[in-house]
Image 1: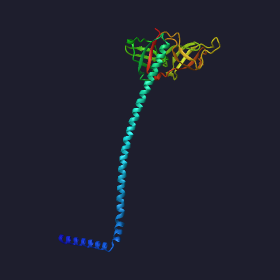
Image 2 (image 1 turned 135 degrees about the horizontal axis):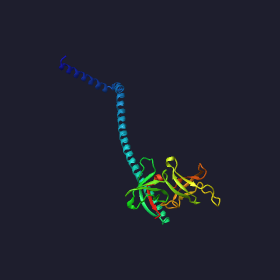
Image 3 (image 1 turned 60 degrees about the vertical axis):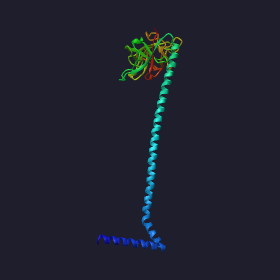
Image 4 (image 1 turned 90 degrees about the vertical axis):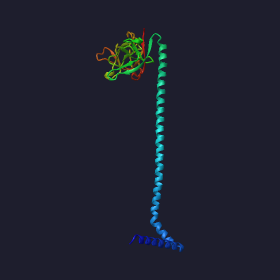
Length: 276
């Protein structure tokens, strides 16, 4: 069949279909046809509509998720800002408290010469107990001088001095040895560090027996201060509190376990003091 004849045939068929639909409509016969069309095409239309709704909902979900992500980032940034401000306030509060303690200590011990210093380093190997401060020989610092917390509690002694910095041997190090006494009874002894041996402080060489008034020379809860035989270290500086007491292996002395008055690990500001 030629192309011309195919075209004529197609036009004829279209004309017949059109005339049939027209007559059916005029005679109200299109309902069965419409029903058939709805049966065949309806599910497809509903599926397409459902897909459209799903696409709309999905798009809305994507937009909402994007907004939630942005809000989450904003809240995280706000939390970080508040945390930074809180840390700054805590630092200022700690500094303010240390300054108040320092002022109180200075008023109570007018007999002492004091030099403010900042902790700039600690032992990086964690094998020893020492600090590095930002004051040295140029500031008048000397080996052996006492180093205290701003509130007056003994932290350690100067062990090495350079022009603008010094090392402080902490009282908890096993190489530390300081003359000390029980504040209540003035019973004296030698305070030694025990950190490398799993402890903190021990006050050794305390005389056995009781005081003339019958009171024990040392007992749990007693406060320990630097003694009068400390040389360059001023007497009466607070060290810590007795936790427990025991007799030595020889039985010729008493040994007291002492807890430092301050957390030496958290010290970041100190005073170098002397009695000259």
